[in-house]
Length: 128
Length: 390
Image 1: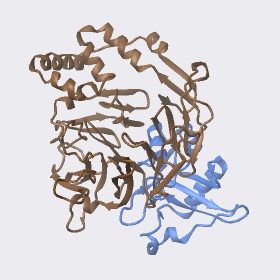
Image 2: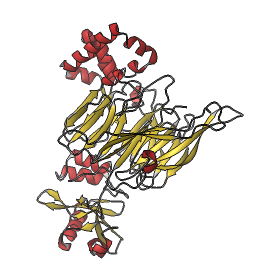
Image 3: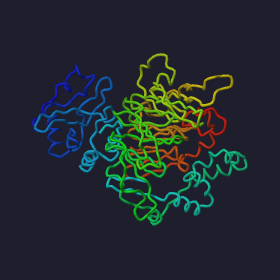
Image 4: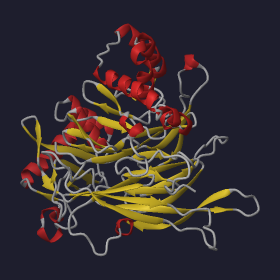
């Protein structure tokens, strides 16, 4: 499935409205590939982490002025169409977060612990 | 009750465990019961008259102090005898739950569901076919302690209120969207509902009116009240704040400290000589200044309010600002925690779940704190005290 990095999530002009990637486009695409291959999907979206070794690392920042460090990415697209993604903050509206199955998969793989899984699930601010 | 990730519901017969513990430790049996199963006893106005008899208070306080120092272990056999496990009635792991009129309500990304308790133990304690009430992704559920209703924070979909109809198949068959603005947590403030996120808050203010024909009291939605009005701000604050509330207490925390405002809802009664009943009021009780400690308390992850104090969750600890002014810190990253302010039996408890254990903490100091003047925790005052109760 074709992947295209969306320019609004790499643009200072949109930094006040959209989350911004802080990793290179190649790493962004790698996050998408990991999610697609790992089946980290729910409701037509993929969810992913930027893994360095087995640990999640920062992949983005939330919109200005908060610029919280973000560690989870959401990928959206259409069947047969292009996909693009963006960093998400589960504790900020629209409270984008992966579903329980994806979180349990990440927990079982050792990428996140149970406390972090619970925070993400409940929409609480957390740093992975 | 505990839900696990593997689809099981664990039910512990807590009252039996505590009763057995009290029987086995007669020297502190009253303390055990008050602390762990009869929280409301010492808030009862008639019991308090006895409790504050100096000849009674001293031995009670001594028992509570002795209990705090006591190390008690319960055998695994005892726990197993009082621990039942069954399949969860829900096909999802809830984000939040509440028990109300023998129904368990569960909210999550899948929506808002409920199921009633069954009378037949072999089938499990809850009916296995839950009823779906709403599609919205629910982040927090709070049942009212005085109006048969359930409030639900639905994230980007706002704040909802559901009327509870105990005789209907769909017990939440009537709902109203109180606010369309984002809402990740909520709680009741008498007849009104407080909603908040990490960077905003509002109060869905309700009035009460008495129907002149039926003499019944009905709630009616008034409007959404902003934080600036709750604290009497004359200009926009420049620093980042977080606001939450419950009952008469509304809190706002920032690097400057913790501000407290008392909310009094609109009254049913008209003061003598007036034609109109009192409208709602907010009284800013001031700020505590920066909270002591080698920690930045200004930006909690989550908050809560109980009679015994105000609870703040951080990355690596849970902090309780006690109603007597003391601060308790529970170090360790929690998986989850909750308080039970509506409970007759557990309103003095804080439960913290960690990765490898659950800790149940009982706060018994609040029985001896002045309920009207305290800043942390909501009041359990009884009698003719103006806390906004109609």
